[in-house]
Length: 229
Length: 229
Image 1: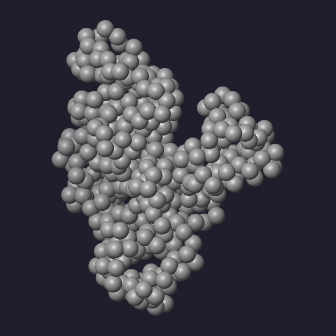
Image 2: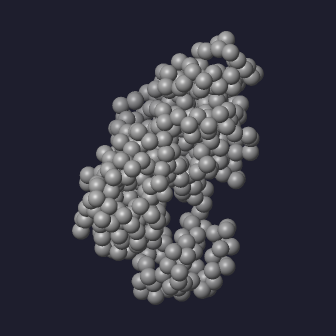
Image 3: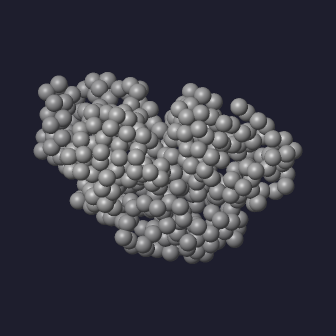
């Protein structure tokens, strides 16, 4: 579903764009005239390397996941977006020097706005506030990617899995995680068998309980210790 | 060796800073008054996580290497800088949202200028041209890191090693690479034993010749085929 909000009929999105007040009146009108609102269902792909460029994404509600996809279908999560998050990852087309292929899917039913790539590019070129904002977004993404790289390079898979389960517990606000081993493997960039083997080891240590399609965290402190947090 | 060039006595660096002509006269004077010139020897560390922030680096001549270092001393190269390269990797302090720890060492005897972090931060905040330039530098770094991540995640070590040897051949302009297996392992973020084992396999296939401290590329086409290039 795409709704264009022209002429300031619905300006709710402005609360989700931190630099709204730093735009000129004329720039605000251009954004309001071009911004698109979408509702997507869990599992829906909203951005792929082959699809047209989505532009800047502002999440109203829900949960998005950005990931890399290999030629043979393997995945690794490189970022997640929640309500009030703004992301450039869907706007590689906006940045002439930003060239990579990323997929973004809805992890939950999600509502978001997108500012078209060409408009955002113009704003970045003409406004110091927007340029600095885009640079800060990018700095954040870069830092996260560097962090992920360090995790992958230096941390063993059991520590990474423990950290992932704790992160999920926080995201879901629940110790019961409804997630398949396959899904976890796709987040972590590893094989399902590796995840299954480690989860069984965690179960053996009393840290988790496993049932079909769900994992229950029993000893978060022990997981935290393992994760080195 | 640190030389301050005040009052435009030596303005050679301006040729190495692509946005020089987009600065105001006053900004140019501030840069000229604060920029530092350094000569460092091969192997010298010019930036480390614990050292003070170096600022924006402009390479005049030589070769620098940016890498991550694990707590237990493992390394992986995340970027290399040659003459005319400008890098923000040494300026994480410049970007409030850019937080990671990176090491930079001279791979060869190197001459470079650095624009102090606080000055560069001011320029970024006040000049649209500098902000856009910094954003583009960062986009480039981000793209490279994403590429490296994909290599690490999806490519087997033999393909990565083949690609690395070909890259070194290009950098050195020679088929004889004077490099230890340890050094290659540090570039690639793996163990020396892994590199040694693969190089022996490459030798068995006639692709390289190995002598103490050097590797000679004999069949670049076969390496290219293996690397999937």
